[in-house]
Image (cartoon, rainbow, N blue to C red; front, side, top):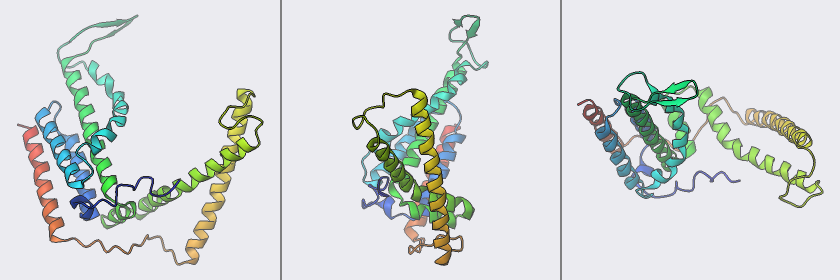
Length: 263
Protein backbone atom coordinates (compact mmCIF):
# COMPACT_ATOMS: atom_id res chain seq x y z
CA UNK A 1 0.00 0.00 0.00
CA UNK A 2 1.38 3.36 -0.97
CA UNK A 3 0.43 6.85 0.17
CA UNK A 4 -0.51 7.83 -3.40
CA UNK A 5 -3.40 5.37 -3.52
CA UNK A 6 -5.87 8.25 -3.27
CA UNK A 7 -3.63 10.89 -4.87
CA UNK A 8 -3.18 9.56 -8.39
CA UNK A 9 -5.15 12.45 -9.93
CA UNK A 10 -3.44 15.31 -8.11
CA UNK A 11 -0.69 15.92 -10.63
CA UNK A 12 -3.13 16.92 -13.38
CA UNK A 13 -2.68 20.53 -14.46
CA UNK A 14 -5.95 22.47 -14.24
CA UNK A 15 -7.56 25.63 -12.89
CA UNK A 16 -9.00 23.76 -9.91
CA UNK A 17 -5.67 22.16 -9.04
CA UNK A 18 -3.99 25.58 -8.95
CA UNK A 19 -6.76 27.10 -6.82
CA UNK A 20 -5.90 27.90 -3.21
CA UNK A 21 -6.96 24.95 -1.01
CA UNK A 22 -8.80 27.27 1.42
CA UNK A 23 -11.01 28.44 -1.43
CA UNK A 24 -11.73 24.85 -2.49
CA UNK A 25 -12.64 23.76 1.03
CA UNK A 26 -14.90 26.76 1.69
CA UNK A 27 -16.67 26.51 -1.67
CA UNK A 28 -17.24 22.77 -1.23
CA UNK A 29 -18.74 23.28 2.23
CA UNK A 30 -20.95 26.11 0.92
CA UNK A 31 -22.13 23.98 -2.00
CA UNK A 32 -23.05 21.07 0.29
CA UNK A 33 -24.79 23.45 2.70
CA UNK A 34 -26.66 25.02 -0.22
CA UNK A 35 -27.95 21.60 -1.29
CA UNK A 36 -29.14 20.92 2.24
CA UNK A 37 -31.01 24.23 2.37
CA UNK A 38 -32.77 23.86 -0.98
CA UNK A 39 -36.51 23.11 -0.61
CA UNK A 40 -37.80 19.62 -1.36
CA UNK A 41 -38.75 19.26 -5.00
CA UNK A 42 -36.61 22.17 -6.25
CA UNK A 43 -35.77 20.18 -9.36
CA UNK A 44 -34.63 23.17 -11.41
CA UNK A 45 -32.16 24.21 -8.73
CA UNK A 46 -30.95 20.62 -8.33
CA UNK A 47 -30.44 20.35 -12.08
CA UNK A 48 -28.47 23.60 -12.17
CA UNK A 49 -26.39 22.38 -9.23
CA UNK A 50 -25.48 19.28 -11.23
CA UNK A 51 -24.58 21.45 -14.25
CA UNK A 52 -22.38 23.44 -11.85
CA UNK A 53 -20.62 20.19 -10.90
CA UNK A 54 -20.16 19.24 -14.54
CA UNK A 55 -18.56 22.64 -15.12
CA UNK A 56 -16.25 22.04 -12.15
CA UNK A 57 -15.35 18.60 -13.55
CA UNK A 58 -14.50 20.27 -16.83
CA UNK A 59 -12.22 22.78 -15.08
CA UNK A 60 -10.42 19.93 -13.29
CA UNK A 61 -9.41 18.23 -16.59
CA UNK A 62 -10.43 14.90 -15.06
CA UNK A 63 -13.38 14.31 -17.37
CA UNK A 64 -16.97 15.51 -17.30
CA UNK A 65 -18.16 12.24 -15.72
CA UNK A 66 -15.32 11.90 -13.21
CA UNK A 67 -17.40 12.48 -10.06
CA UNK A 68 -20.56 10.94 -11.56
CA UNK A 69 -19.00 7.50 -11.98
CA UNK A 70 -17.56 7.55 -8.47
CA UNK A 71 -20.61 8.91 -6.66
CA UNK A 72 -23.03 6.09 -7.50
CA UNK A 73 -21.46 3.89 -4.81
CA UNK A 74 -22.80 6.28 -2.15
CA UNK A 75 -26.43 6.18 -3.30
CA UNK A 76 -27.32 2.90 -1.49
CA UNK A 77 -26.44 4.58 1.83
CA UNK A 78 -29.04 7.27 1.12
CA UNK A 79 -31.70 4.55 0.96
CA UNK A 80 -31.74 4.73 4.75
CA UNK A 81 -34.18 7.62 4.24
CA UNK A 82 -36.71 5.35 2.50
CA UNK A 83 -39.05 5.72 5.47
CA UNK A 84 -39.69 9.31 4.32
CA UNK A 85 -41.91 7.88 1.57
CA UNK A 86 -44.49 6.95 4.18
CA UNK A 87 -44.85 10.46 5.56
CA UNK A 88 -48.35 11.16 6.97
CA UNK A 89 -48.39 14.45 5.06
CA UNK A 90 -49.59 14.63 1.46
CA UNK A 91 -51.99 12.57 -0.63
CA UNK A 92 -51.87 8.76 -0.45
CA UNK A 93 -50.52 7.03 -3.56
CA UNK A 94 -51.16 3.42 -2.59
CA UNK A 95 -51.84 1.14 0.34
CA UNK A 96 -49.61 -1.82 1.08
CA UNK A 97 -50.49 -4.53 3.61
CA UNK A 98 -47.68 -6.46 5.26
CA UNK A 99 -49.52 -8.68 7.72
CA UNK A 100 -50.96 -6.41 10.38
CA UNK A 101 -48.81 -3.50 9.12
CA UNK A 102 -50.27 -1.02 6.65
CA UNK A 103 -47.86 1.15 4.64
CA UNK A 104 -49.21 4.20 2.82
CA UNK A 105 -46.77 6.06 0.56
CA UNK A 106 -47.69 9.69 -0.13
CA UNK A 107 -46.77 12.15 -2.85
CA UNK A 108 -45.16 14.46 -0.28
CA UNK A 109 -43.10 11.59 1.13
CA UNK A 110 -41.98 10.49 -2.34
CA UNK A 111 -40.83 14.01 -3.24
CA UNK A 112 -38.99 14.29 0.08
CA UNK A 113 -37.25 10.93 -0.43
CA UNK A 114 -36.11 11.73 -3.97
CA UNK A 115 -34.91 15.16 -2.81
CA UNK A 116 -32.80 13.50 -0.10
CA UNK A 117 -31.29 11.16 -2.70
CA UNK A 118 -30.43 14.05 -5.02
CA UNK A 119 -28.94 16.13 -2.19
CA UNK A 120 -26.77 13.23 -1.06
CA UNK A 121 -25.67 12.45 -4.60
CA UNK A 122 -24.67 16.05 -5.37
CA UNK A 123 -22.88 16.49 -2.04
CA UNK A 124 -20.89 13.29 -2.48
CA UNK A 125 -19.79 14.43 -5.94
CA UNK A 126 -18.58 17.75 -4.52
CA UNK A 127 -16.57 15.96 -1.82
CA UNK A 128 -15.05 13.56 -4.36
CA UNK A 129 -13.95 16.45 -6.55
CA UNK A 130 -12.41 18.27 -3.57
CA UNK A 131 -10.32 15.23 -2.64
CA UNK A 132 -9.32 14.64 -6.27
CA UNK A 133 -7.96 18.15 -6.91
CA UNK A 134 -6.42 18.88 -3.50
CA UNK A 135 -3.39 17.25 -1.96
CA UNK A 136 -4.16 15.89 1.46
CA UNK A 137 -1.44 17.95 3.28
CA UNK A 138 -2.74 21.11 1.58
CA UNK A 139 -6.26 20.27 2.70
CA UNK A 140 -5.12 19.82 6.29
CA UNK A 141 -3.30 23.15 6.26
CA UNK A 142 -6.36 24.78 4.71
CA UNK A 143 -8.36 23.53 7.70
CA UNK A 144 -5.77 25.07 10.01
CA UNK A 145 -5.93 28.41 8.16
CA UNK A 146 -9.72 28.30 8.53
CA UNK A 147 -9.34 27.94 12.32
CA UNK A 148 -10.47 24.33 12.59
CA UNK A 149 -9.30 23.07 16.04
CA UNK A 150 -5.72 21.80 15.77
CA UNK A 151 -6.51 18.61 17.65
CA UNK A 152 -9.00 17.63 14.92
CA UNK A 153 -6.66 18.42 12.03
CA UNK A 154 -3.81 16.56 13.72
CA UNK A 155 -5.95 13.47 14.33
CA UNK A 156 -7.17 13.43 10.72
CA UNK A 157 -3.65 13.93 9.37
CA UNK A 158 -2.19 11.07 11.40
CA UNK A 159 -5.17 8.84 10.63
CA UNK A 160 -4.59 9.33 6.91
CA UNK A 161 -0.81 8.91 7.16
CA UNK A 162 -0.81 5.74 9.25
CA UNK A 163 -3.83 4.10 7.67
CA UNK A 164 -1.43 2.76 5.04
CA UNK A 165 1.01 1.60 7.70
CA UNK A 166 -1.74 -0.30 9.52
CA UNK A 167 -2.88 -1.84 6.24
CA UNK A 168 0.64 -3.10 5.59
CA UNK A 169 0.72 -4.51 9.12
CA UNK A 170 -2.54 -6.37 8.53
CA UNK A 171 -1.19 -7.82 5.27
CA UNK A 172 1.92 -9.06 7.09
CA UNK A 173 -0.24 -10.74 9.72
CA UNK A 174 -2.33 -12.43 7.03
CA UNK A 175 0.79 -13.66 5.22
CA UNK A 176 2.17 -14.99 8.48
CA UNK A 177 -1.08 -16.85 9.14
CA UNK A 178 -1.07 -18.40 5.66
CA UNK A 179 2.59 -19.37 6.04
CA UNK A 180 1.75 -21.29 9.21
CA UNK A 181 -1.39 -22.95 7.81
CA UNK A 182 -1.55 -26.42 6.34
CA UNK A 183 -3.75 -25.30 3.45
CA UNK A 184 -3.03 -23.86 0.04
CA UNK A 185 -2.67 -20.08 -0.19
CA UNK A 186 -5.99 -18.33 -0.70
CA UNK A 187 -8.10 -21.20 0.69
CA UNK A 188 -9.88 -21.34 4.02
CA UNK A 189 -8.76 -23.53 6.84
CA UNK A 190 -10.83 -26.65 7.37
CA UNK A 191 -11.17 -26.01 11.10
CA UNK A 192 -14.29 -24.78 12.89
CA UNK A 193 -15.75 -21.31 12.88
CA UNK A 194 -14.85 -20.94 16.55
CA UNK A 195 -11.19 -21.69 15.76
CA UNK A 196 -11.12 -19.12 12.97
CA UNK A 197 -12.79 -16.56 15.25
CA UNK A 198 -10.12 -17.20 17.89
CA UNK A 199 -7.31 -16.71 15.37
CA UNK A 200 -8.92 -13.51 14.09
CA UNK A 201 -9.24 -12.22 17.65
CA UNK A 202 -5.56 -12.94 18.31
CA UNK A 203 -4.63 -11.10 15.12
CA UNK A 204 -6.73 -8.08 16.14
CA UNK A 205 -5.03 -8.06 19.54
CA UNK A 206 -1.59 -8.24 17.93
CA UNK A 207 -2.50 -5.36 15.61
CA UNK A 208 -3.65 -3.24 18.55
CA UNK A 209 -0.46 -3.90 20.54
CA UNK A 210 1.81 -3.19 17.57
CA UNK A 211 -0.11 0.00 16.76
CA UNK A 212 0.09 1.19 20.36
CA UNK A 213 3.82 0.54 20.57
CA UNK A 214 4.43 2.17 17.19
CA UNK A 215 2.43 5.28 18.17
CA UNK A 216 4.46 5.67 21.36
CA UNK A 217 7.74 5.45 19.44
CA UNK A 218 6.54 7.91 16.81
CA UNK A 219 5.36 10.42 19.40
CA UNK A 220 8.69 10.31 21.26
CA UNK A 221 10.56 10.70 17.97
CA UNK A 222 8.43 13.73 17.07
CA UNK A 223 9.05 15.34 20.46
CA UNK A 224 12.77 14.80 20.00
CA UNK A 225 12.54 16.68 16.69
CA UNK A 226 10.77 19.69 18.19
CA UNK A 227 7.10 18.84 17.55
CA UNK A 228 4.85 21.38 19.30
CA UNK A 229 1.42 20.23 18.13
CA UNK A 230 1.38 22.11 14.82
CA UNK A 231 1.88 20.56 11.40
CA UNK A 232 4.11 22.68 9.18
CA UNK A 233 4.31 22.99 5.42
CA UNK A 234 6.58 24.56 2.81
CA UNK A 235 3.53 25.81 0.89
CA UNK A 236 2.78 29.41 1.98
CA UNK A 237 -0.84 29.27 0.67
CA UNK A 238 -0.98 32.88 -0.50
CA UNK A 239 -4.35 34.02 -1.84
CA UNK A 240 -4.08 35.50 -5.34
CA UNK A 241 -6.46 37.86 -7.07
CA UNK A 242 -7.62 35.01 -9.32
CA UNK A 243 -8.50 32.97 -6.22
CA UNK A 244 -10.62 35.80 -4.83
CA UNK A 245 -12.33 36.26 -8.18
CA UNK A 246 -13.10 32.56 -8.56
CA UNK A 247 -14.46 32.42 -4.99
CA UNK A 248 -16.68 35.45 -5.55
CA UNK A 249 -18.07 34.05 -8.80
CA UNK A 250 -18.81 30.66 -7.27
CA UNK A 251 -20.49 32.15 -4.20
CA UNK A 252 -22.65 34.27 -6.51
CA UNK A 253 -23.69 31.13 -8.42
CA UNK A 254 -24.51 29.32 -5.17
CA UNK A 255 -26.67 32.24 -4.01
CA UNK A 256 -28.36 32.21 -7.43
CA UNK A 257 -29.16 28.51 -6.93
CA UNK A 258 -30.81 29.35 -3.61
CA UNK A 259 -32.88 32.09 -5.26
CA UNK A 260 -34.00 29.82 -8.10
CA UNK A 261 -34.86 27.03 -5.65
CA UNK A 262 -37.25 29.32 -3.77
CA UNK A 263 -39.04 30.83 -6.76
